[in-house]
Length: 456
Image (cartoon, rainbow, N blue to C red; front, side, top):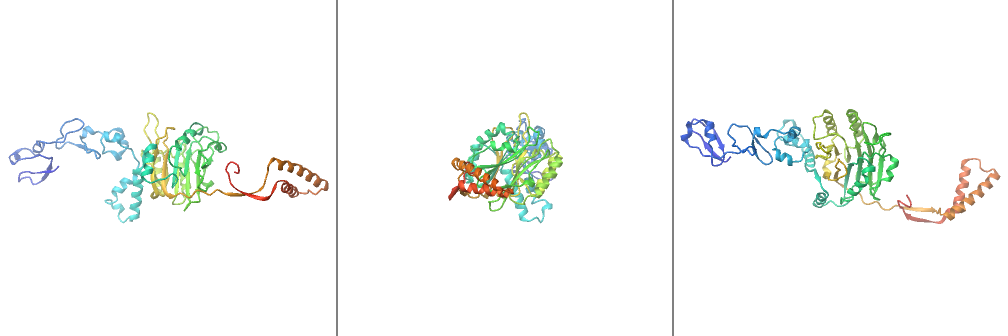
């Protein structure tokens, strides 16, 4: 609207009309609507191809600026579910990415809403950081992920990173997961998996590579599927399991570790909420877990089975209120789960209370199951590779020395028995140790590097 038309003196209002719309004073006897509707150039509805007249309800797409009759732009079912996209036409909506970002609308209102008057700049920066992280979250292919790493100068193991996949059974999908992980030009610091469906004793059968150590939590007894957690930690990290935060029941499964050789300790957990469990009980236990975690440097990976793209459920609202009240920010805003003939959902995520450190987050297009893996890379510096630990060897238990030991201990015990000098277990251990020293102890101790296979 660029040309200005001034109506007769009896009308003092100034109107802005489409380009090339010229009216003359002799037309002043016409009705106001007729004058305006006689403009040579009118908007045309892109749906029905008819002209849009003054007074008709219109719809303008905020993305492509397409103008439609209001009746031609009836909201489809998807727009109704996603109220944040009510101003997109159906074409733009079909090509858009459904996204969870409660901070964006909050950020838009910060300057105009009196509720936020007097808030500190730090608060506004915090909201902006969280919004940017969720807006930047993307669905990646292996190629686009490699390009993103190059653009951000992310090297193979230079930053702290996490990766999570609901694996839907180690026996079915673990080998496929390992293959896909090795296609990524990055050694993730911590890899979490859920629904392993294996016991802790079976976990030794599942190795990602010699560069990782694993810690598992067994599946629920007598449950063949939908249970069990695992964490794989790169060997450059020193870590310990946090038993008091590791829980396994029908409402929540959690497994937490603490990385200790970083500038500041980093807490990482993997969590799974069984969809058949009690949601209120889950939130109650989850709150207790969060109370035991620090206010920074915490990362919680998991399948929470709460769809953040559909906040109409009271259970999902309660979950969202819980994580936000503990200053946790979801890092995944796009869909992570899709089954045939079903809507996409955002149920897998990574939560952190240090979003300002996040460089990139998103999902990866793996063809393992209906869950997409989620990842994040943060600006926490990665620790240097642990130096190979040297150990001192004092004994040589080769077969020849063991034969000598068998003969020596037999003679020593027979002699002690005749003398009745064995009166306690300590007496026996002293004889045993003396025999070992005589037959297997090295005259000069050897120093060697620890080997995970030969000297575990």
